[in-house]
Image (cartoon, rainbow, N blue to C red; front, side, top):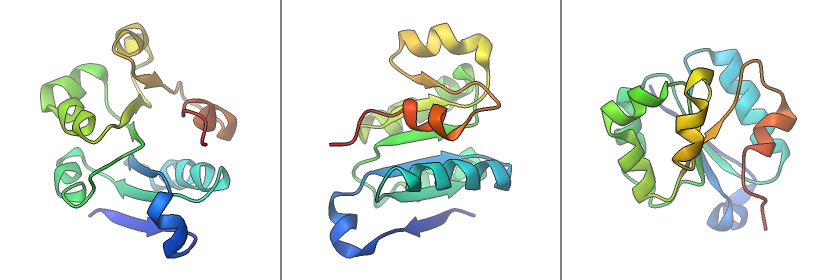
Length: 128
């Protein structure tokens, strides 16, 4: 089941980046979310199953970045790259390091496990 985390009050929410985190391991998901929060106000959407992404994004016109525990081919096969692209999301894969060249050629990011807070924040565009 998708979970939503809203941070830092309604004023910050109006301009805060929105991040999607697809991660089955709850501890890793919490680490990613905590790292994103430490970089400033944001909203996060956590899902444990790729099948929940479309429903979770129905009311989200814009996604800053999507951290996906999926391989490159899975993202293409499911069409998630199109759904996320429509919302302006930077796709960042968190598994399948042998797919790194293909992912980067497409303009996506890649986090090689085990990753650190610094690596997570480094995968994102600089916040204005």
